[in-house]
Each structure stands twice: as structure tokens, then as C-alpha cells.
Length: 93
Length: 93
DNA sequence: TATACATATGAACAGTTATTCATATATCGA
DNA sequence: TCGATATATGAATAACTGTTCATATGTATA
Image (cartoon, rainbow over all chains, first blue to last red; front, side, top):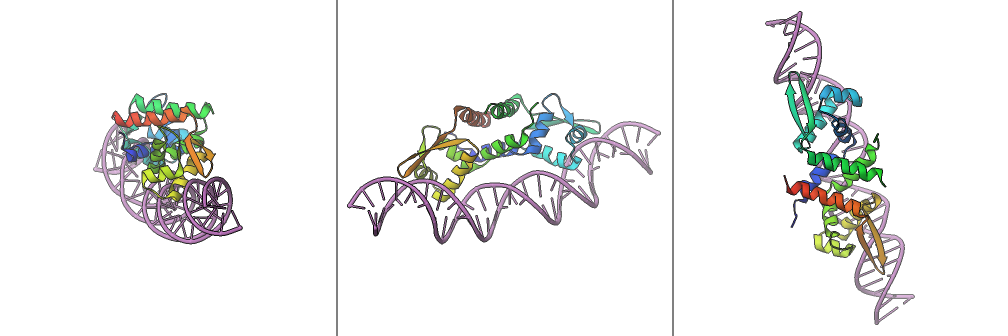
């Protein structure tokens, strides 16, 4: 029987923020660095960085360092699927 | 292009609470009344009722009144699928 | 090494939220 | 109608969370 409701709540809680969803949407096409994300979303670098940390701690994204830049992408396809399923849900109701 | 990130965030936010997830899990088998849910979860009737209201406002559950009792169930199979997908995600990582 | 750029992080503040408590509403049976 | 039971709800409080601001860390290049 399933009993890790606290973990599951944390997972959904992580998806339950507009900024984090926008960030994930940015990562749909390809990995992106912090500066691109903050540029595209019109948000401060700090705010984006804080939220990327939340996404990473909850294992929704992973990061890759290249020189001064850090590129973020979906942690795995499973997460991406759930994210996309949520979008589909909203679009069809 | 998808742009209803606030609605999507609200949807996930609704799922992002341990109590509400436990309530939804209670509804997996069959519809249940408030008193059964609070009995099973060991929570006050008030707390459960408040959360059921949140679930209903966000259209994750629907209710049906029978005499003194109000029976709650998943609003549609789509929501149920997403809920179950989250559980699967947690179980396989 | 000095400077500029990219990112991370801690503290603080404002806004949100879940539970509790008290109470209101609604329905059933005697 | 009266009492008992089921549910809903408003107010209050405590805990949590997202953004901002200031600053620290890390990396490349001149």
C-alpha cells in the first residue's frame, strides 16, 4: 500500500508554483542557462536561481556546468511526462 | 502556446498537500462521506471538510448529497489518472 | 592578478495556507 | 417540534513560501 504522501505532496508542491512551471516550460525544448531563463521570463537572476534550487532539490531538474554557465534540464522523461499531462489536463476542461 | 500557468499552478498546488492526497487516496476505491474520511484518517470533521472544499473548488472532486450525508468522489477519470501517475512516479524512483 | 560576468545564497519581509475552535445550517427520527 | 447527527464555515493563529536585496563564490579573459 502506498504511504509516502508527504513525498508525493512535496513533488506536487514543487509543481504548484507559477514561476517554477514557467521555468520548466522554458526547458521543454532544450536545456537553458540561468541567464537565458531570467532573460526570457523577465525575472531577476536571484529569483530564478532560488527556484531552480527548489526544482533541483526535488529532483525535477538536473544541472550541467559549462564554464561560467550552468545549464538546467528536466531530470528525466518521467517528470516531463507528468508536467505535460498537467498541461493537457488544463487545456481540455 | 500554453500560457495558463497560474491555473496549472493552482491545480498542482491543490495536489500539493498531504491531507488532500490522503483524502483523494480514500476516494480511490469508492465515494465516501465526510465522516468516513475523517474517521479513517483520524482527523477532525472540520479539517476534512475544509480540505474537501478546496478539492471541490479546484474541481478535483465532486459531491453528492444523500440525506444527512455528503458523498465525495473524483471529479473525473482524468484527475484520477494524474493522481495515480504521481504515485507511480514516486514508487519508481 | 584584476576585472567582469554568471550563479548561488542568506536574511528579511509580505503574502499565503492548514488546522483548530466555536458555531451555524441541514436532515432525520422520535 | 425537539434532539441528535452530519456537514459547512468564519475567525484566529502558527507555519510556510516566494521575492528582493546584498553579497559571496566561481570562472574566464585581458
